[in-house]
Amino acid sequence: MTTTERLTAPAPDRAAVRRPLLTVDDLGVQFRLRDTSVHAVTDLNLTVRAGELLAIVGESGCGKSVLAHALLGLLPGNATITGHAVLHYPDADPVDLVTCGQRHLARRVRGRRVGLVPQSPATALNPVRTGRRLLTETLRAHGRGREDCDRLAVDVGLDPADLDRYPHELSGGMAQRLVTALALAPDPSLLIADEPTTGLDRPLVDHTLDLLRRRCDDGSAVVLITHDLAAAQRVADTVAVMYASRIAEHRDAGQLFTAPTHPYAAALLDALPDRAFRPVPGDPPMLTALPPGCSFAPRCPRRTDLCASQPPPTPLTGGGTVACHHPITTGAVT
Ligand code: SF4
Image (cartoon, rainbow, N blue to C red; front, side, top):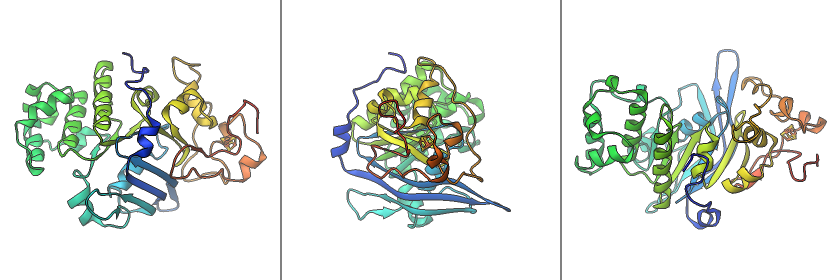
């Protein structure tokens, strides 16, 4: 099976009936700099349900990783978060991750209810502990025995013997698999995986994607942050395409990959080697100087005067929406 083939059939109806694990409403993240501010996430709405694999895709710098860090309270002190991100517990009242505070995030959320596979494994690993010790300590902290160590290593495609190495003795791909194992050790109900296939060769990319897919099939949820559209196509139930801090299009994966309606989503798909292999023209805007209308307008073949002056509508929480004045429907400008 190649990466662009789906591991399972899309299951929008199955995902839609399951309970929400995370509901994000009007989330915004701004960073204060000396002379300006950066709008890294703007008016973001989405819901992640049990059993759902949501892929968040887009070019570097569009806000994907900032979103992940905002949800887990991992942003630096010059960040301001607005809006809501409600985590739903099966056995307790829901908690707003924006307002609950670091104490709750550290004790009940981070690395417990919500796991994170970080984008930079080298900086996430304690350099003076072997992989086995890191994994054993994490397992023990969550009531699991060290006998699960080797099994987790195999699950992520790591030779158990490599657990006895220190982080500096691991290749980038091995370190990536180790941080994935560490994130999975608490068996979180929601896993945020930020570029989890970085540094892996193709068979290991597919191995990791299939592992994430199986977690969702077993009832957990995964938010897969990736610039790899083929990876999203292989395993995602739903896809949110981000551009310049906003969600441009958010819908069922099968629909998005078959008939994207936002011009940016369509351009991203056209850039795939097995499609038109035509790069998206131009560059994304600076997040310090976003235009008043649609941020994609300078690169968009469908732009009109309205696009330059009025921001497009914001996709709502339920997904299946597009932030565009003239979405692609019949091929003509509407
Ligand atoms: S709002 Fe206008 S410029 Fe923006 S993506 Fe849609 S058609 Fe293009």
